Figure 1: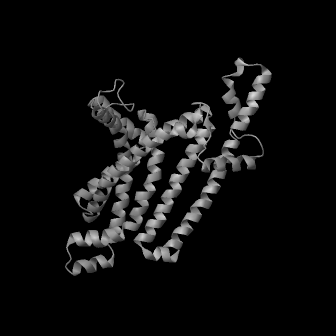
Figure 2: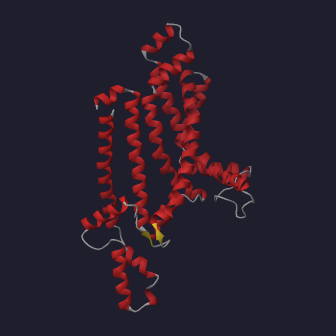
Length: 328
């Protein structure tokens, strides 16, 4: 298992190097001059000579001087040391800018995944057990409907129902304009503002995940060893959970861990729709403003999350099925 893990970590490390090269190269050829954008606000406050001298200083500060290979090397070294550059919009270090938004995105994404899995796995298992029955058909119709709807349309539907028609949940923001007094009251108020984006994210992933779990369980329940277990007189609960579900875990692990990246990606749309101050909103604002330091940091963060998801999938495979780690 140790050799298997080391191989996967080396693979992830090499892949991350190539991804960082691609990200850095893309932003090198993006239109505009980040140093010039940084200096535009101060253009009328100094003489041309002073402006030119400070512009050259800003170029050095942003690491835009020297050959592109040297710029990439310096950028990577600084990233590994925790120096992700400076945002000219916020006039602060990038890590200081994204620290809180990342926390709110992680909270929203993890909460939606937990809710989704708590609903998806039982629904998928029970639907597979009741295959061809009324419950199974109802779940399939519901999941097909949800699977065919884009995320922004689901968000609009939930806004109309819960915020406009029933008026029980706020549409946008993370806390009321006039926050209630007391920590507990503020916590409940934040939960109310979190409810709509959380429900939309969970619902958007619920349909596809339910169908995936159902398909994996249907395949497992149709195997010969399941019929053998039932012929031996084992109870249905033992057959379903100890035999079928255990052998269906390999494809389900892909679903559970692979959903992490999908939820983080989908949160960008949801955060913009509901005014949730997460890293998706920060990244979109930075892209429109040409603040490439934040944009590159966000893309690296998403890449790391994706690669860690792949690593967790590979390691989970090895733990669930020892034949996989031996063959690899």
